[in-house]
Image (cartoon, rainbow over all chains, first blue to last red; front, side, top):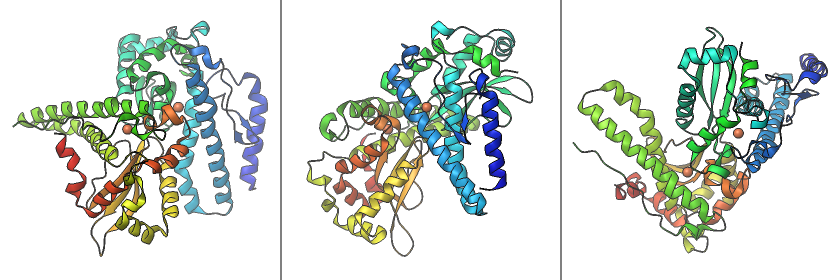
Length: 231
Length: 217
Ligand SMILES: [Fe+2]
Ligand SMILES: [Fe+2]
């Protein structure tokens, strides 16, 4: 193992030890590591807790199978990446990048998604307050107007992908952006709230009627999580 | 000038005819809802395009292009897909119905098993929605066979490319039956590949492969 890699392993282990107490609070803290490996975070509610908006069957498959596959595949790809680095094999490092983006993105996106959902009994669907509420009104006029635009963005995704309410780190404005496949929200934009528009996110319950899913999901949006991400 | 309007081509078999490999529920939704939606949206986009052409509105014409590509691709891909499937008990479902194509597959990949492995690897490697295709590429010293994947609804329409058969790798194509087990779907689809159609497309021209589209205008 290279010294850089070893250092990052130690760093992550230390990070985990110090952050574990507060790891479920906000942001990406739920993306925990065990000895440098990504692990599937526990859901902060039961699989059936988001019904009727999202069925327990969907939640169970989505979390325990789909998300878990991203975690496993991301760990495989990072392991291969570490080997390629050690061998100074640049071709392999480049070849692995799409896999890191896809599976790492899948892990990040789903982790954020679980956190920005909540059963209605735990505040799901309660509108945002404070700075985030003001920023939404500034950009879209009202929460309802934003939701309408957001649903149009979701419906317009051609293939698999996500729609996000993001904050532009340059201007501070909140805007709606769509991302293809598992492309994560990184760089200039900060993710506040994401909705999974892959067919696996709704098909067992809504089949081709995806607009119904996009309408229903707002009943279980955890705006408190979005507020914590907003700066 | 009146533009073309497309309609849903009828399935060449019953919704339950591909069971147990593809369930009747999947086939019905896939054909009557998903494919129909691509056609509806394509017709609407083409109508808007006609209007934009008549009014020499170039920005609108350009802005309509992604929607036309996506929905026309969806119509093309699904039309080809239905035709390159058939019931498992049909003689068309046997590779022996495609002697010339199988010969070329063996010459290209060594044997059928290696070809199926390569095809499966390509399909399972798609990151997101898309399609896997066996494609004949014309030109050069002799025609070649290649495995291609296309993202979302991108159709196989490159120069000299003739789609031989395609497999839909969108989750709607298998999820109700196979859930997250897409490898099993890719495994089972071989039971319902229409090799007779594949042979015809392999031996024919591009216009032959796409004739189903003309029939649904
Ligand atoms: Fe997902
Ligand atoms: Fe499809």
